[in-house]
Length: 90
Image (cartoon, rainbow, N blue to C red; front, side):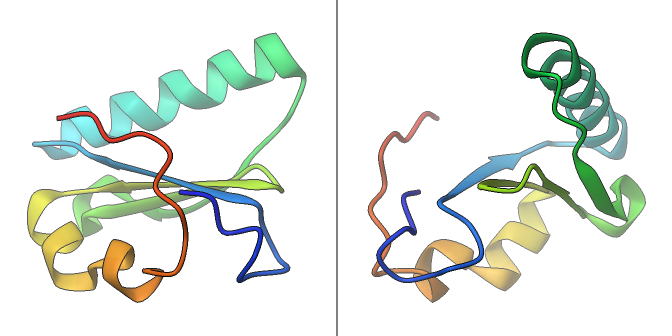
């Protein structure tokens, strides 16, 4: 989601749903490893898989990894509805 026009703290949100704690943690670990390797960027991690929401802040890009119930509860796409969705995969 492109949020450049509505926020000054980041340019993009990436939102992803993982179906289990193990999947959420695996997504976070793999993302951190690959971004560090490919772009030499170290993200800051907040939250935990067992809480249903992991946020990884890469500066201009913030990644939200949700459990299905947390994604439905927080509805960030609705909250940031003025942002432009660039790609939706299901």
